[in-house]
Image 1 (cartoon, helix red, strand yellow):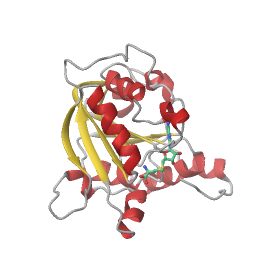
Image 2 (cartoon, protein in one colour):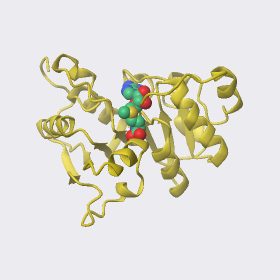
Image 3 (cartoon, rainbow, N blue to C red):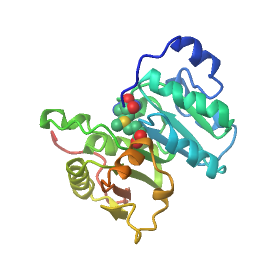
Image 4 (cartoon, rainbow, N blue to C red):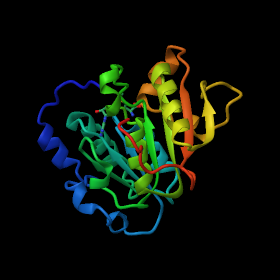
Length: 226
Ligand SMILES: C[S@@+](CC[C@H](N)C(=O)[O-])C[C@H]1O[C@@H](n2cnc3c(N)ncnc32)[C@H](O)[C@@H]1O
C-alpha cells in the first residue's frame, strides 16, 4: 500500500495514540491484560488503512481486534480512524511482523486475518509470502485449537499457491470461493471489504477467499527445507 509522505508524522501519531501499542513484543502472553477482558482476540497482519478491522471491531464488540501495519504513515490512518471511532476493543501496532512468536504466546489468538497480502511474485521470495507454509504454521502455533485463518486476495496466482500450502499442510478448509462477491456467495467476509477489495471490486476483479483451520493431525513442522 503506497502512501504519500505525511507532514508531521510523529506529531500526528502522538495526537492519535490512544489505541497504539508502542512495544507490542512486551505484550506477549499479556494481551488479555491489554484489553482488560477475556474476549477472543483476532489479529490482522498488514491492515493497511484499517477499513476492514475498524468495521469488524465496531460490528463485533464482544471480540477484541489487533491491527498490525508495518508502514508508519499508513498505520497513522488506522490510528486516526480508531481515535475517531473510540473503539475499546481495537488496538494497533506499527511493526512488520517477521516472527509471530515474538508477539504472541501459544494459543493467545482466536484467529488471524490476511487481507490482500503482498504477493512476492518472484519464486526466490516465496518464503516472504504470509501464506507460505512456514508462516501458516507459525500463525497456527499462536492460534488456539479450532481457531481460524481467513485469507482474501485479488491475486489468482498467490491464491493458487496458498491453497497448495493449505492442502499440503492438511488444514481443513471451512469456506472457499474464487468470487466472494458473487450473489450466490453468503460468506460473512463479504460484509467487511478492505480498501484494496473495494478498488478491485470497482474494476470487476473477482476476489478469492478461503477460511481454514488446523486439524489435530496437521503437521507443526515442515520436516524439510521447504
Ligand atoms: C497490499 S496492502 C493491503 C492492505 C489492506 N489489508 C487491504 O486489503 O486494503 C498490504 C499491507 O500489508 C502491510 N504488510 C505487509 N507485510 C506485513 C507484515 N509482515 N507485517 C505488517 N504489515 C505488513 C504493508 O505495509 C501493506 O500496507
